[in-house]
Length: 307
Image (cartoon, rainbow, N blue to C red; front, side):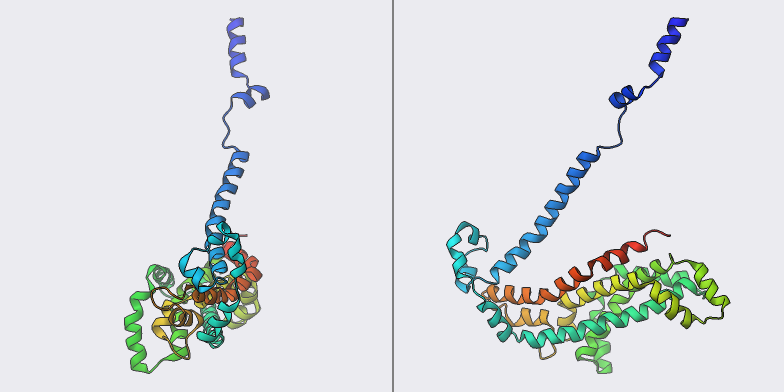
């Protein structure tokens, strides 16, 4: 009896040493860390290589760009001496990129801040105001996120034709309409995490909805507002399809349309100019994102958890 008891005790008692040897673990942090780093390195490589190719091709002469790939610079080091800034000068002059750059600014700023303000009002109403079918309307707004923009091009163009809308106003309204659903969704979810005690205190003190919105909600929602502003600005600046459909080529064309129409040439003969113009158009998005990426990440993650 005693021996069996000792045997059972020996089997049933787990010491720290036996736990370290035999107990399974729920994952290996060291291996997971290396695997994560490897995946991130692969993703960074896949993103950086095309950008590097774009950058190097923008300096290559037309003969080299049309006959060999950009990687030839590494297999034939002597070709580095042929790099030139002439592609940028020719692209800016040939495609009038200076005017197109100003047009892109004129399109992007209103198409960013107008939907931001309107969506902030709507998000406040969906979060803090009670009205019939509020949840149903919000579900409709969320459902619009999965509707492709291009399915509305024909009816919107017909409406523009009937109302006589064209130029900057047409592309502004298009981007405002296409961006509203995402803006309302982001801002409403963020505002839902704000402390309601502050709102109730403002109501007790006699503050109206406008006072509560401008004095409390708007300052407290700055991370989400900044995140959407960055996202919308980059989207509008890099947009080609909406600009091509609603504003087209001409003196009001943004930089994406100018690069596509004036630099590509026939049968891809102008890739050295397209890459120069494309990299020129990337300067503003790169600077905006690098300068404000912390606001972008903070705004998108702040509404993920309450507290």
